[in-house]
Length: 401
Image 1 (tube, rainbow, N blue to C red):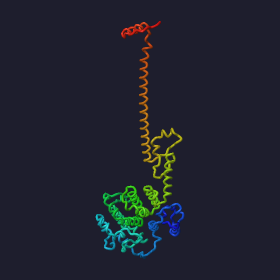
Image 2: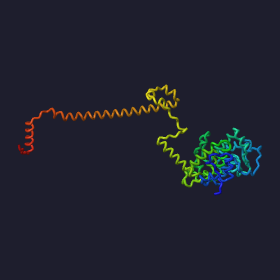
Image 3: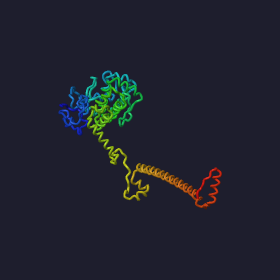
Image 4: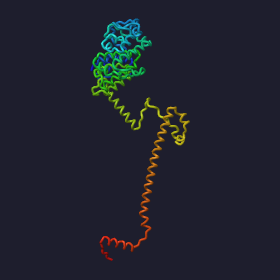
């Protein structure tokens, strides 16, 4: 099979020499254990080219490094072309004008520039020096963040956390989801937005947005018409390889059927899942895996000397543990004492009831046995009583002596 792979997501190292080798020759090592179709597609090649800074694209145009139209536009010093306005006026006007954002195709290349040309011939692509200058300018980063929020609102989303990039549904998400499903050209816009955020210093915004779209398409069953774009383009626009791997695993677990998953090495993903299940089973058997996110357990002091540990006072606890661990220890100790006292009271009640019941049975037996033991036996009285009983009943029995 003479094909070249265009996805290095599952490679251990991604240095310059290795990347050059991936683009120039067939990577047989990858083909041996990652037989998935996406790695040979044009979409994979496009996203690989973006992630590595367009080093393998043919320069069909000349860019003067002194000219920085995108920087001037984001500084609110010029209007976008053709027939545009300055960025601050556009951001204020576009918040309530969704029709303009939908049917105007001239602003998106200016609002989210890339190192490649778009549909608008008047929009200039980015270059390295311009990217560096835009990252340094606070006004540029502020306007870029507002532009990102504007487009999220247009798609029915809301930026919940500016530090982490976490997004959620907006109030009008049903209406905007319907528009996003019916106008698939927005898939190209979202891909451009993800690429631009990775170019201009908001790389940490990529993974949360992609994970949100994966959840909406694969789990919630929404946005069915953008599902393929989410897997082909959105997913592989994430520059951070570790996050990109986690997103591929996230998508594979929720994709149906899993055997038709074409965006990752199914055998490798299945082995990872089986290994994870094995670790969970091992943890249940007593082998505990260390996790940095798990809160540290309270250290036991003087394990060999149990008596000293039992009589250890609160001051010694404070000297060893911080305030949070101390409070946790006190709460655990109180819960343990409450539980112990509850069991003690239950056991004492049970023992008391058993004792009372046993004593009642003993008294009853004594009452039945003592009259028979203390009363003397009188045969004459027994005979007369028996005769009287027979006379009353009218029955007589012959007794042979």
